Length: 239
Image (cartoon, rainbow, N blue to C red; front, side, top):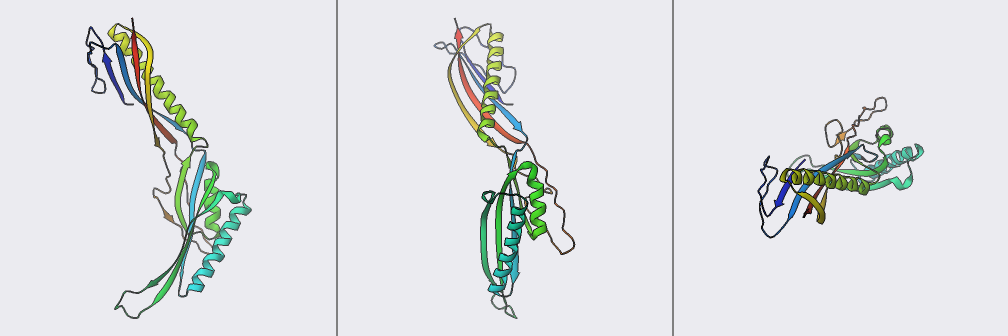
């Protein structure tokens, strides 16, 4: 945890215990300024799974028809498993023509189609969603974003933790200086979203091969979600 202490006293200078703290005298002020940072961790509660299907064919109609057919199968499998329709979002869709480089013979043209979805589910259901999608034909897994159901509540906890840490440091500093801590004169704060995202086979994107008889198994490893808050608190020194 990072802590920066600045003391303004009219009669003494406090010894500094480490490089993370500093003190100085100001004859016209009686305040203690504390800068403190703290972090709160929470198990992931919700997940956004990114999955997709990509295929290639020699004709535009052929690649399009296959992509639509498989995409419908994937979405239907998710819906049958109980995934709400509003939890499935199209992230991207592409249809591209690919020609051989100029001068390369024999010249050829092929087409590729790509659909990707974002599926929002409970963290405990993320593994099931990936397994169902891959079994239904998905051949792209772009990772999982882990989060909490109420990010603002987690940020509030981080802020409260930083405030509590600032108060502890202020009380310790006042005690060491032989003065009494007074009221809070001002508070400023900032919250840094520090979210552990995903860890899928130690990669950000996993290409899953699917055959009629074998489906490659993919294991997800949820990580805690973190929020970090910093505060600057100015305390008066009581008479």
